[in-house]
Amino acid sequence: MSSKFLKVRVWLSRSPEVLSIAHDTLASPTYVVGALCAVWSWADDHGKNGIVPKASETHIDHVAECDGFAKAMQAVDWLIVDETGAKFPQLEANYRPSETASSADRVRRYRERKKAAAAGFVQS
Image 1 (spheres, rainbow, N blue to C red):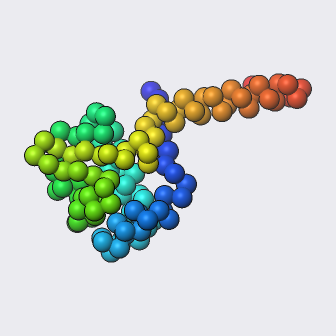
Image 2 (cartoon, helix red, strand yellow):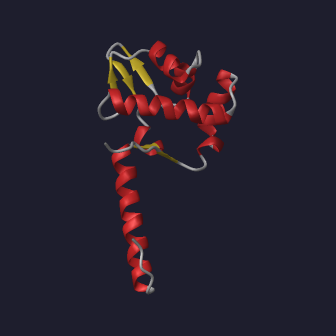
């Protein structure tokens, strides 16, 4: 069984969008980043290509554990909710699905082993 990983931009908590969501929901930027990770992970698990069919603002507020979170995401163009469901237009720009993260980690570990071997160190 493989672990799932989540990669987000390191400066996400200081982005204008996160600061706007924090202002609109009266939450801290740190809380907003955590809630975004929960929402984006949920969208990745239950949707396809950034679309979660039949999802509503209520679903997103529930996942984020914050009333008004969906409306705040819509205000910064990170969410569109209509009669068909929820669409996350900036999902790939902000969130890296688990497959990308674990692949990148494997490549990084391979390069570290290769560099160590070239330097004469043996790793097991």
